[in-house]
Length: 327
Image (cartoon, rainbow, N blue to C red):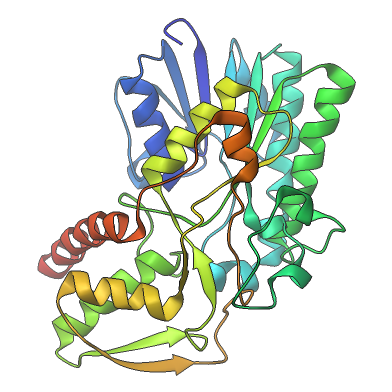
């Protein structure tokens, strides 16, 4: 690792920023951090790495990013929480250009390994109609009926990785992320995901004195949420283990959205009146990660309890909320 050139695409985002920080701590020799956003808008930025502002949907930007690279981590995508995904399907689909051009550039640069961050949104919607969902196994992605827009882009990009490995001998690995959350991420503005949105709503309820919270859907829909530290550890293990097929990377601790609100209320020490916005984007009724494959391949699975991770996340968002309120 100390002599490798590691490219992190999407380094200005939530997971990308954490990955860059962790690569630094692990002694990566040279880190090239790439994102479309101006550096001032990156969630985390480090002066001891090479920071580049490129639009990776353009082929030449990918060529420049991959020069001399050994490892490429593709976490770049135009995405957000369910509200963004359901209302911006075309923008989500356009992210396919990023993975396509990065794969081509990585192949031509003789990159030793290519990591693609996929999503549980690739899974067949027919298997996610019941809140008491059976955990999703990797083979449940087919026959294909993924989340419209974002899910299709991820599934197509997975196939691109597979065929570049088959046709050109590239080493590609794919992880299907299940709802990653934690500090240093989006918590307001419309792209935030449920854990951050609920933390913000609880803080707003406490600050306003109204002690009420609006929940999207009926609150009975189920999910599993993976804390960012488990996600970063999983990325490294999957890359080092060279897992040949797409693999779930997620917690299997299933919770309802109502249950997630319960946890945040307990952390904040409040009890709020709940209203339900039934016409809001809510996604599938149930989704959970089956971790048998990652346990079999790596002898490991994400294990940080939701209550523990949410306490850290709420604490960080509270600091950000207070800072915004005082400015």
